[in-house]
Image (cartoon, rainbow, N blue to C red; front, side):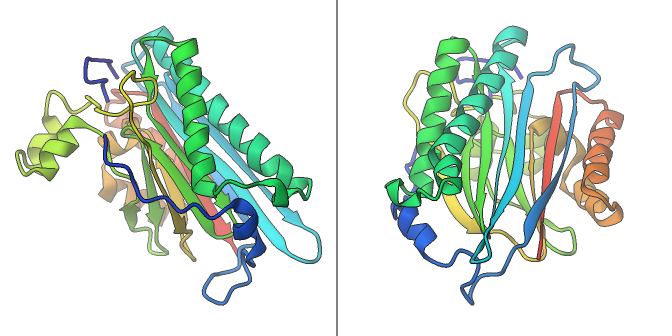
Length: 294
């Protein structure tokens, strides 16, 4: 993905839930009747440089664990996809710096205290932690790759709750038991904005010459705020996070077919990557597929 003046690849702040983590965790995370119990999360990943790029500018991070002490079960995980921009060096450095900074921030500010039983000392909400983590990613990119940038789509899972942080046009989806995908992030792209305004059609958007131009990206110098929200993980179901090298090439209908016809998570991810390459592989391809087990 190239980097242009608009930052290849917004602006209204979202409503933030500011309940401190210690109060959120004080509630039974997976015991409330209106929620579903999750035993643990399994995941698969897939990545390829594609067929038309010499270097990989995508970065992914995936971690899943569980705390079980006989009183409560707390499954948790961090899943991140970043798609770098700005040329070979800046792109791959930017996506790596952002992913490392965000994952490190979330582990040190949430998971380390959680495992140490120190949740009472966490005075920040999960959404605020995600926002602060993305701020750390922003600082890391500006320091490590000035002039570069990256998309950043991250999911922080505790129990059956998913806190999403999103900048750019990598995407997160929920998949229902029938494999049907529903996008749970909004692309921060110029073409998406034109589509929302009714100035172009879906067909025109798919071939628009500026379809890779972003108006919000980690690393940009103009102030911005990431999209952040908390959702309930589907049960039964799955979550997928991917770069546009997958969703922009394979298409949602074909991705759904792969999910429905394929068994294991790693196999499903690999088939998605193979499908993108078979369609020409014009960009780097990255996907994470997460499934809950009760």
